[in-house]
Length: 467
Image (cartoon, rainbow, N blue to C red):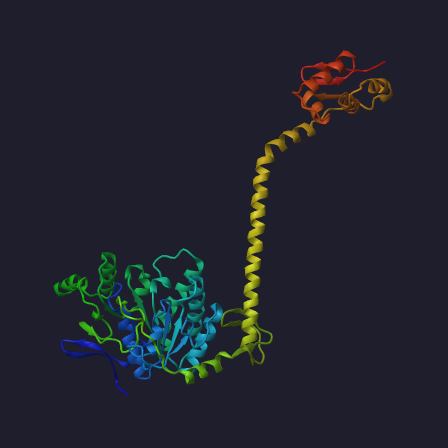
């Protein structure tokens, strides 16, 4: 086994990295087409050649090509592909912890292809994946490559799920070395990567970088390490804007204490993201056989361990509080657990819809309430002060007039007055079911006054006493 990772050349001399790069942190940064992914893949190829396992979280969908030769013919390296159109194994949103545990237990290289999934899927999966890795202590150090880093550790977060993902990845980068994890961020926009996360990167591969904000972020990274900018470095920042594809400046101020211009050795495996040429057919790719690796992973993914803790209370992921007693470890069918998890997730979705529907109904009711409040208040005033009574009157005295009234409306008004004796005009009209401003109400009032059945003083209408 070679004791060095052969990354490229510098001044006609091989540029290599020690094997313990597997547990170090790197950032590969450059604009589209500068060769940053190819540079990261070159390091992954060398790690695989030297028997150092790694994992790649790939939302772009290009790393699966590491399983084939540069021209798409069989070759490449035996990395298991999980998810995506070329996946050896399927992937589900809630599989993050389960896949992390399986990969660590079997010591394999793996590409986790997230390219066909939603951002919600990405953030849920990567959060669980990173948190589970922190619970494990692999016997062999391993490296984690993260494509499109700003999607997972952005400078600004607006969604809680993204914030949780960023926190989990940040923790893995900061503390993972204690457990044997190395990390590589890959991005075309370093200015969009969280500054505290970028500051954890010990080494930079800077490829062609044009944006002023991105170059500023890189200069700040160097300044944070107590490196005073020299005239030579100022010239480097100008040259970075014009670097040919596949060329990079490598900075390692603390680990290797060097800065060198490197020509990256072209990746020896297939790169599906390479620019298409007009008139050139799409390459037919034949992936190398990794069935032995897949079988090992399937064995791990087909079981799930449940720990039963008598007289104890679980207070969080991986934390147990109080109680004593024997710990019982039981292996159960992972497929059944997975199906149950999907059912629970579906129930959560349906519950969320019900809550949303209820909230929408409550908003509509509140709007109707506001609309009807003025009318309600007016009617309440009317009915709270509706007339007064001086005791019961002898209704028989008014019986002949009820018969003479003829119109139903006149009878209603007279009956209301007999019951209440004294009301305002609006109260009388409301209880008599007639509009106060209508000619009908005026005609009824005229009949009552003409026959001496009421007396009117301003707005008040009183029942006249009949002998």
